[in-house]
Length: 390
Ligand SMILES: Cc1cc2nc3c(=O)[nH]c(=O)nc-3n(C[C@H](O)[C@H](O)[C@H](O)COP(=O)(O)OP(=O)(O)OC[C@H]3O[C@@H](n4cnc5c(N)ncnc54)[C@H](O)[C@@H]3O)c2cc1C
Image 1 (cartoon, rainbow, N blue to C red):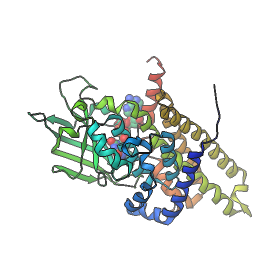
Image 2 (image 1 turned 180 degrees about the vertical axis):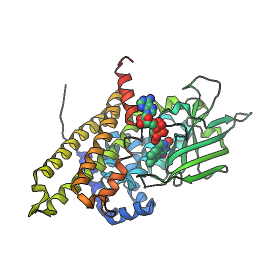
Image 3 (image 1 turned 180 degrees about the horizontal axis):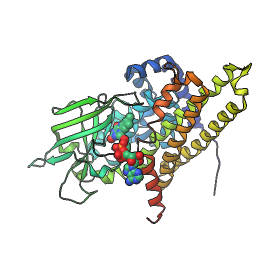
């Protein structure tokens, strides 16, 4: 049965309260400055956390609001309409932290970390990629070795493209923990505080996502207790199961919600600009080609909205949704690029000018089909899940 329903009252209220927060705490000028200075406005994030939204991926018994994936996606969508400044850190707390620890943490990790995550006190960074490893994560070379007494783990290797390592409390490092067991059964996820001896962090200059530095993280004989393996000692060699488990379906949606929010902001800005800018004696929105471009962008956005929230709803209900979440990531990331570039053209030269938000939207949106599982990875996943013969 197909059903079409209005957004439930609690989501309308949440959307409204985030919009008011954004207007009050994230004025456009401040957001532009943060982006220019590549600055994480930690005190503004604390005020966001005080509204309780970081608890949307944390069970009530740990001080959260109870798992509500649609609500958490709504928060990202609304924050991203002002850019990635807080949408990014929110993901690093509620998703990288809240989701993974709730899903795969040991009871001790859940007791220690989840209440702090729910209060927005902890940020996590993802240390998955490496210089020679992108989509093929099962091939990571960073090694994790257990000491003879089994009580500690020693990490060596280089993580690349680690966003937020400088501001995070923990880097979730994917490491090869057993050279002798078969692929997919030889990986562990390890919680690594970035201030430990043996860690060097080196900034990478790159396009987009300036809400926090993206870095290389070099690990040289870094020692952590076995309790800091995600899942505790029982999590040893269970990293792939955790990475590719149910949490992955939700993970695909977080960057998708960012892409959607940025595209929505671009459409709103272009829609407004086209009514204000006059050429040839009339507002440019009165020229048919500009009119059509605006309407096409808004229509594509509407299609994205349905895919995103339907997939989020399936994930929230814990229904099988690997295909739908991959379709949402694939379609929305690719369509959002088209939408933002079309909107940039409507702003003409001002769409390329620093100080106009459009230029930032363009920088940020270009990264979306690459991060969080590239478009080709989503295509491969959909084809495999739908059993398309090779
Ligand atoms: C700004 C930014 C921030 C990032 N932040 C993080 C982070 O915080 N943590 C982290 O771990 N990583 C991060 N990444 C890395 C990101 O997740 C990777 O870029 C992504 O996984 C793709 O890996 P790759 O770029 O090495 O591409 P590769 O895997 O080398 O792929 C290159 C191209 O080949 C295609 N390709 C590869 N294999 C196949 C295949 N089997 N079939 C079809 N096509 C294929 C890909 O789709 C892509 O187009 C970040 C990247 C950027 C740019």
